[in-house]
Amino acid sequence: MIVDELVNKIKKRAKERKILEVCIGVKYTGVLLDDGSLGLAATLPHQLPHRCESFQDIVGKPSMEAAKMVFSPHLLPSVVGAATINALLLPEAEFEAVSGDILDLLPISGKDTVGMVGAFLPLLPSLRKKTRNIYVFERLPVDGVKEYYPDWAEPVYLPRCSIVIISGTTVVNKTIDQVLSYLNPSQTFGLVGPTTPLAPPVFSRYGLSFLSGVRIKDSAKIMNIIKQAGGTKDFGENAQKVNYFLKCSGRF
Image 1 (cartoon, rainbow, N blue to C red):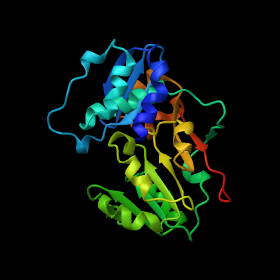
Image 2 (spheres, one colour):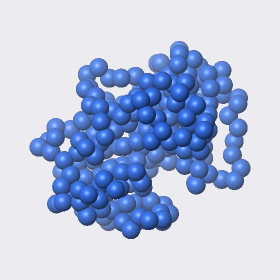
Image 3 (cartoon, rainbow, N blue to C red):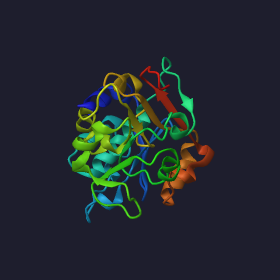
Image 4 (tube, rainbow, N blue to C red):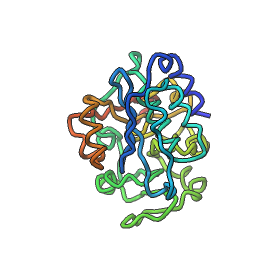
């Protein structure tokens, strides 16, 4: 599983770092390490049970204890685990990061059929201007999304897409390996969103075309934003959108 590879990748650094603070925000969960590194993962509150765990016990503990929560079958511990992994990942010198919005960088035209695994509502208006051929896969219907399809329809429709935008939350719920099994090398596909683990060496082995996530520039300000129910549009200059293009093709 991809989550196994991500945990193995951060294992060495995790031995040196401890958990300083955990914030379970309405939109994002943040895990702050003792060296100031901050990792994020979407909280997905609409999928949480009515009773949730407390994470006070992991503050001050080795970060590997929190990172391993990504293996949990329960959503909130897995969210904390994914955020911890993101805090522990370091920039990869051999991979060039490109700043900017992924939709401005992907060569999407009206001839393309775009599959979106997870409803990225802020991206949809811009995407609709580029193509009318859109599938949005979610577990439950989303208000105002006429392109909605249930997630169990992915095996049928994802192979028909020329471009596939996959939510980084597929790492949290461990569906990433399954989603990738529906795709093939002729397609352009990658992970998008602040939950995306920016680990190009891991994902390049699975044929991904791109990774699109964030680098935190001011951990304290981002933590305050998520404490106040802020989301991506509120991050401003405190976080930088970065993209790694992993697969050479005529499309890039």
